[in-house]
Length: 94
Image 1 (cartoon, rainbow, N blue to C red):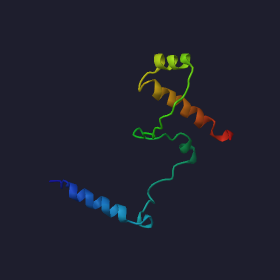
Image 2: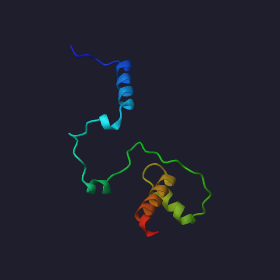
Image 3: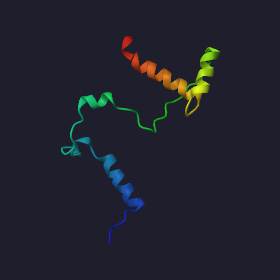
Image 4: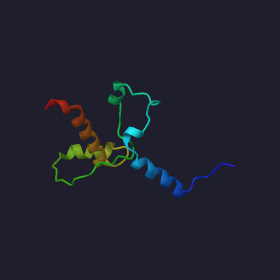
């Protein structure tokens, strides 16, 4: 019969890992990820950026277009997605 871990067992293991110095962790069997992989890296699905309410004047036709074409998450989320992509694509232009 397999031993089922209790919440206390799991909590004890987590506490042990948290308190373990990085130098004691053996990562020899974990291969390094090629640098090219980082170009394709994405934030995990649970990432939720902090929001800052602002007053922003947008052209009526632009807002209407986003309201009509937003697939999921609403038009404000879609505008954020487009702006985030623009910022990401132009980050080196400073």
